[in-house]
Length: 283
Image (cartoon, rainbow, N blue to C red; front, side, top):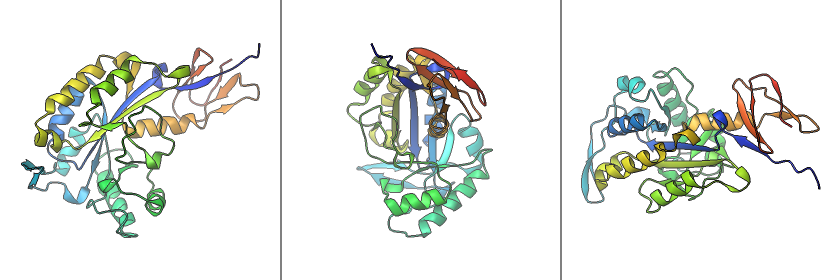
């Protein structure tokens, strides 16, 4: 019988599943959302419009008056300390209508946000969910490593293109808890890794009066924390990018990890850790 080999990427700690969230606009409801996330040990990326930080504003949305004021610059380091911040265009302008001015918005956003946190800001969420090839080229030029769309896949596949990163679903999706149960309780064919990506705006919980929906979701998925890597968008992008740089020997029995962090692999049923800068026997 042939000696078939199946190598699967594993997330940190040898986990096969990862969960990440993405929330837009930096609104004051993020204060409640981050407290909730921290209580359940779930992590997220928050996409901010730096030119609007500290704005005080109310609006009527879907027939309900809602506070869409934004957080203050000074509270960002503490508020999002367990999470990640990313760009959303400094003024939330449409990326496909603004020409090269969109590139300026992203760079302005990066510069302003990087002045508030100790890491490089390299993520993005497309304003209005709009993008095209020209916009993607500008994001690459602006040093953006990943960008989220608003297209629900209802799947747990890893992104094929980080600059067209489609989420699993929005938090108001009717299938939310069905998808959560499927993700947490079922294994993918051949042990392949799975990723659940949830997105939204935290002010939407006020519009619909359904904060308990998020509470139920977080309570459920956190019950499986031993098998799920709770990560930010940026951590997932960085890990998968590092994993793609693994170098395998010709016979497939060794792997060299040139990256700065440890990586994990399922080598035909054998769980292996590959330390940074080292070669590991995997077969």
